[in-house]
Image 1 (tube, rainbow, N blue to C red):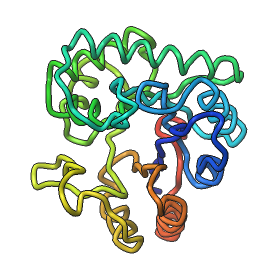
Image 2 (image 1 turned 90 degrees about the vertical axis):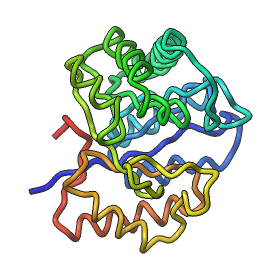
Image 3 (image 1 turned 90 degrees about the horizontal axis):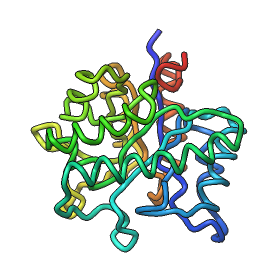
Length: 240
């Protein structure tokens, strides 16, 4: 029987903002990547999202990003390996405090946006990011783009890795994600997303959906239904 994880980026709205999409999305995913305040979210939203994920039995991960709320952490900028280490360690520790307070445990770390993409292709940044996770808690799982420098660095360090594919993003020929400033980078057609999820299943450990997409809820529902119909079990990696 094939297993796969469905993960979603969450906790990306202010804590005092009504109508967060996270609650409905938690009905369909098996792991949640929760923003740690640098690119989005705030302490109140971190608390609420952690508590909601814990109630649903969804595996909880830290989702550290560049300090760029204006650009939602999706704008690349020069950054040193030392800075990557520091901001990853800082944000992971912040999210883990809320996780401990909720009486549960942190499962994984998945970098966000520009930080994710930069570390996916830059070996020095990948090593710094992986080292921060390892030094914080080497039992954590790292979610990283399949075939990326992050995967290589994590395996070299002895961390558990969940190789990641994307439901709602297109790829370039080298296996990297199409930059968001290019036409067609984001998949906005549900049948296309389902087809991509099915094509990736069996080749990756986890599939990501971005929770801020306008079609996020019907898309994850359709993808989950299709995978279950295919006989695939939905589980967080290393939690089977």
